[in-house]
Image (cartoon, rainbow, N blue to C red; front, side, top):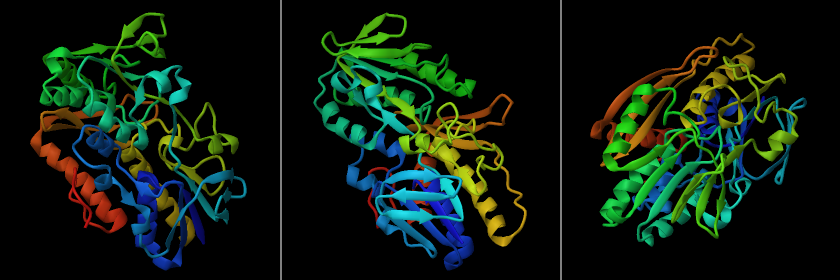
Length: 385
């Protein structure tokens, strides 16, 4: 039996690892991704703020050596869910089971002026390029803004504002700088009131301006102002934007999306097509678009695939739980444990920032690199062994 997995992020890596552990060479697993390396989302901020080199946080897919798993670096051109056929630049792949974990594509150009007058920090290329931009920034008005919803990793804009405060302070230019965080939500982390309250207190303590329920419609590079949806504007010297997120074009062309994303059974991650699953950011499952949720969904799909292979009835169900780490700066990291159940209000538990959770976050990353790639990684700014 062949399982074709599209996308080698948290979801694809966890799924293929679980299938290899259970079946080894008895299952033919093809993992496809257009990139040649995996990078944690939080590592982008490490590189951006000069805490790590890009080479230290990129994990080559060529290092994946698992029984039954074959990695193919190529671009997916067409998806035919009814027949579970995928056409790529490396040829056609037919699967008995198809799992779509292609994430969300980012479109900086969808916000007029962002490409010409600002910077996006959510792609690997964008974040890595900002390392030099920030090192040459002499201070001034900084705006960190979300341009649309939904977006990946809801804590990241708040983390960026707090780390920017640290960074400018360390460089001795904070006293002549202003940091503003602009978000379309009424709270920094809506599912966790306690986390939001802690963040708002940190913003107030460090002089970071919080602008809730505001959407940046466009940038005017000539005047160096961000224009809001209501027509108001805000001047800036440095604009860091979270760009518009959309399902990949190849997914939209497949006919699987509804209102922009792939609908799935929230308990099993099955799509409307038999033998076809979708996990992670590409779905409308109802959890935040963050890797830890894709990882949890992958565990459920692994159980479903295992049942199909064995001719049994699957029993695993997705519980909607995810644990995210939240950088507060000053070498302090908080933890948010949130559970999303369809039709119910999210339940969030907040653990206050500490150095202990900073160590937990490093362990979170190192354990997954060991599990997925079979290599030791020494964490933030560290090296591969």
